[in-house]
Length: 108
Image 1 (cartoon, rainbow, N blue to C red):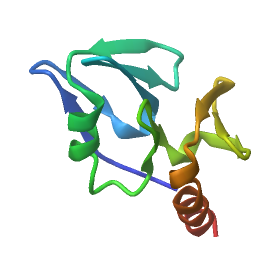
Image 2 (cartoon, rainbow, N blue to C red):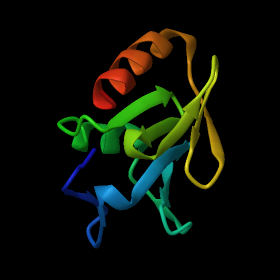
Image 3 (cartoon, one colour):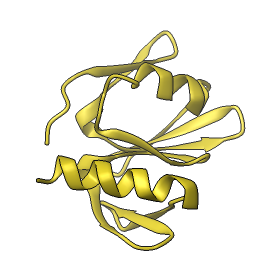
């Protein structure tokens, strides 16, 4: 799996989407979790970031709080997904079936 593009947040920050493990909503802010383990805070909402990543098939909204890069999913269970750095994120019931379908197609 590959995804080559930059995600621009704010007026001065941009991130290579390949370096983003997941994004986490915190009210009107978003935590950007990178492969390196670093976490950046952005004043851009998760909804706006999701719109910017709309054309990228590797990012999936698992829950109202999380947007994950499918390249870094290491396991998934009934109600959660594990991503690199041993982080667990919630998988909502109504998004579970779609997640399984997309994840399966990207890994075949």
